Length: 189
Ligand code: MN
Image (cartoon, rainbow, N blue to C red; front, side, top):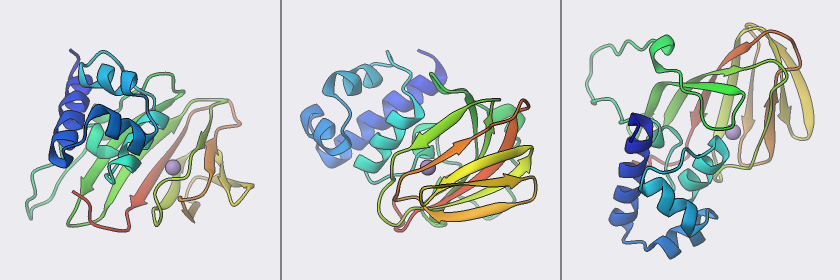
């Protein structure tokens, strides 16, 4: 089993065990089929980001929970390098680097995201109270907020309620790099 799949499989099984949920219950809570959840737990599936978001919302947890183990909680500086962290989830024209995975003491996570040229991703609404902060690092992109595509270039940023439909796209011919700080309303573990 590849490492990201193993972490995902172990995490999903552990969450289900903590909550004492059957696969049927987990399917009902997440909107992801029982068959798919079973495949993920056996490490047989590399789910899309959309599927991971459904699972995260259903379990009231963060997206980064499924990408890698949370860093050890300590008071010292935490140096993270996106170069070593970037993953390309199945079926995505997008690279994802969990720069600061979710920690309950802070209530947020920070990703570096790279959109390949022409890529567009529509996001389902996340759980109530989730807020995203999109900060463009390199290139020019558009963010779908409240039904309007907002154009942003490097050093520009937008914050929006992510419990409504939203999206991201790269209309250009060069990759776009941005940071996404996702704040969760409660301090879920
Ligand atoms: Mn989103």
